[in-house]
Amino acid sequence: MPSPSEGVFSQSDLPQMLQMDLNIEDFCSDWSHCDLMSAYLARMVSHNRLDSLLFSNLYSSAVNELMETVFRMRGKEGTLQFSVHRKDNIDRIELVFPVEDDTYLAYQDAIGKVADDNAEKLYLEALFAEAEPDASLGLLELGVDYGARLTVDRFEDGRMQLTAEMTLEEDKK
Image 1 (cartoon, rainbow, N blue to C red):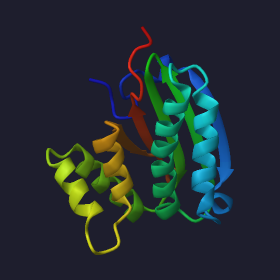
Image 2 (image 1 turned 180 degrees about the vertical axis):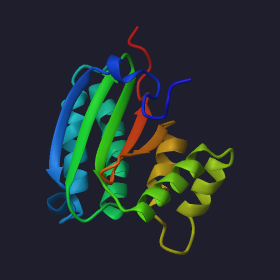
Image 3 (image 1 turned 135 degrees about the horizontal axis):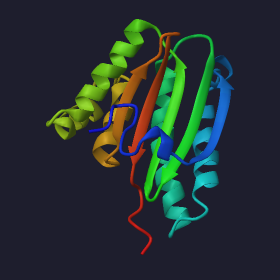
Image 4 (image 1 turned 90 degrees about the vertical axis):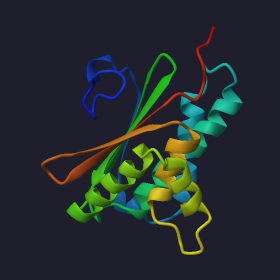
């Protein structure tokens, strides 16, 4: 079984499609950056899909959930590193960014909800709750609606890696 950071395929098997490094303060200065970045990234990686428009829309929605989660839960200073890898029909999105210990624990808790047998129930409860949803809602949506495999890893320097592996298109046969 692969380690959480390796996911479905190992680090050495990861063909990288693109990487972007952003100042976290600049990125988080405006909520609309989440949508703009996700739309741009989706267009960049959707060029060779069977239905590139459908794939781009799905990809943009999924990446937007990741971006919005980082927008809500992250450290104050540092770099947001965003990379996209693809092998066959599996897309792996990695976001590395600064977090405090309590934020990392919140991500671990959210990932635990996604892996829970009752993830769909938890997602619907969070979606239709009267209170403002917590940041785990977007991660629950990725797990339930997109079948994403989510992991988090912590680095010694205080950064965290949030990884989402998804299959948004069946094999191109």
